[in-house]
Amino acid sequence: MKPRAAAWIVLSLLAALPLLAGPQQTETTTPAQPDFTDHLRISIEGYLGKPYSWGATGSKSFDCSGFVWRVMVDNGVLFKRTTARKLSMSLRKPEAGKTWEFGNIVFFNNYKHCGIVKGAGSFYHAQTSLGTNESEFSPYWQPKIVGIRCFRLTGIK
Image 1 (cartoon, rainbow, N blue to C red):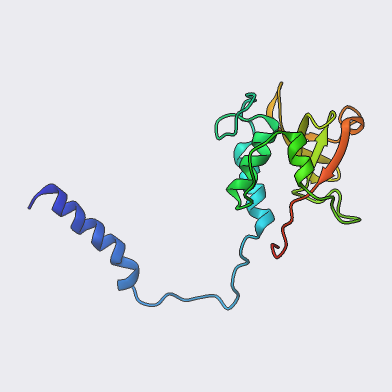
Image 2 (cartoon, one colour):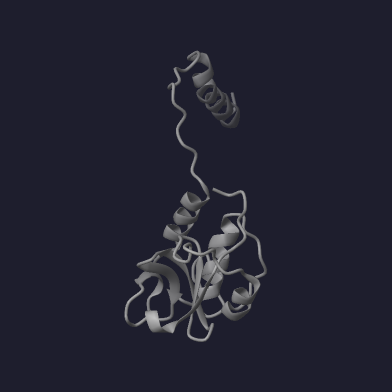
């Protein structure tokens, strides 16, 4: 028997083992499916620590709007890759009381920089000196905020 044929047979048998073992016991509760925000967090965490590179959209390096674009596109939110300024003009203001919700986009420095809100205390972004990271809304960043916008994600939990 040729080595490829033997390997194919072995792999086929291994793949069939769960079927041969019979029905599996299932739990009475169904595990919760990850929602949109879970997937967004996973994407962000996967890109943290990547270096800054002007005009880059990942996956090895990013600029600020490229980071926002990549994370959103990875999660099915499709929009044209653009500058922070143009992105802010294409998005809506968050509803009252929802400004600091995870996933909103925060803009700084006369719309020359942007990031993704983690919560009222911090945000994710691609920073020239540190690459992609989480930063606090510290006394350094607070006065530089010029706006917060959100995507129209109706029907997404």
